Amino acid sequence: MLMILATVACDSTVDTLSEEWDLASRASDALPGSTLMDRWRPLSLEERDEQIVQEVLSGNVPSWLRILRTLSLERVVDGEWVPVRIGVLPDYLAVGSDNDYVLVPMSPQAAQRIADATDMMLPTSTLVDEIWAQAEVKLAPLPIPPSSAMTTVPVFLQHDYRLGLQRDSLGVPDSAWKAGHKKDVVLTGRMNTQAGRVAIYGWHRTNGQPIQSLYTGHTDRWVDYSHGIRLVSRSILIDGEEADLKALLEDADRSRWFLGDGPMQEASYPIN
Image (cartoon, rainbow, N blue to C red; front, side, top):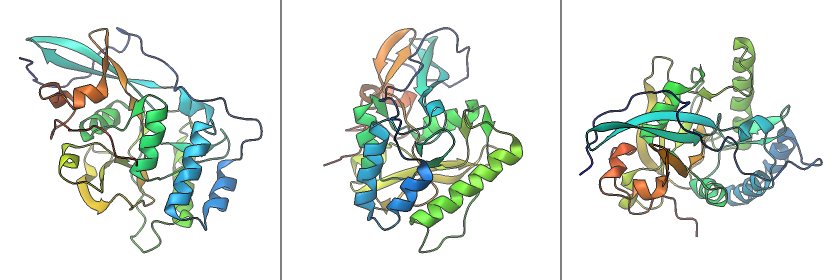
């Protein structure tokens, strides 16, 4: 029987993870983020999602987004602490070049397609808390008053522009491991009984308290400016041994390492 006690940060130099997200190289003629967003203004969610998936999988993302950071945890197995290492993106998914990129909200299905194609996963709320705690830079949330336009590209761009000003005012490099500036689309055990919903969580204030508790009230067709997609590695290290995060989230005992309401019947969003 596995005994789960607590989570603590630990030395990240013990084990070695893949240091780079496995994506195609960015083409020399790939479009910048601002141009793409302008083209996507009149598209439906489904059309925009398809374009986002194509751009990301073709490698049209900033170079620094490819460099994974190591989330360092410990879990208790048979009475002993063991190190756990998980690779995470340093920021939310973005399209475009190093100098012209946009953090782009998308449906959980689009995010799942990208994750499946690149051996990655969406995080859980437990992992989102850990990512915030270990991130190099903790940005304060910048909410925009709710309106019927919050699911549109112009508001996506408005929020992205504000985030850029925030980074510049604080002197935060684009490549820094950042957290706090978006809600995460997450995996949760609620998905076992709540099909057709998107689970969101996070948007941590600088005191560590999230604005958004774990929420599944929206359908999976709801995508607003505050949503971010931060992928984590499916292949992780536990005490130096490779393990499958998806299988762990579906395991009756070990799901508790990363999930407060598991196990999940299927640790992914359906995409068909």
